[in-house]
Length: 176
Ligand code: FEO
Image (cartoon, rainbow, N blue to C red):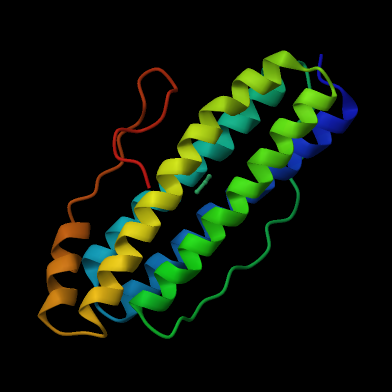
């Protein structure tokens, strides 16, 4: 059985993951609006991944006999200045999420909830990839500057990303 404090915190993280999905879907719409379909695809896959993260929290709270509470999901931003601006925002967002996961790990330790601590380890590892993939694209965008053939090439590359539903609940093969 989950303690009340951890249950509250896990429900808040479930909401944060849903917000992340909403945010990346909004970024997908932004890229569609400026006709960068590869970037839009990357964000669409990212939104699916976040929904998967949310589902993991949803199932875990239930599996531990807790009560899932679905809070209101805030509306995300809708406009950015450039692709580089979007990926700067994404990288910073993922750094914030890493902070939230770390706070949860600390709380699970303080509450001596070893099962939750083990459950959260998947997210600790996942966040390394989340930050790295966003920062990798950000650095490429910085290198090419605004627009030009470089942007087209990155768009082609990002068009290839696909979401693969993890077979064992251990995460997708193509992380973001
Ligand atoms: Fe759910 Fe992007 O971390």
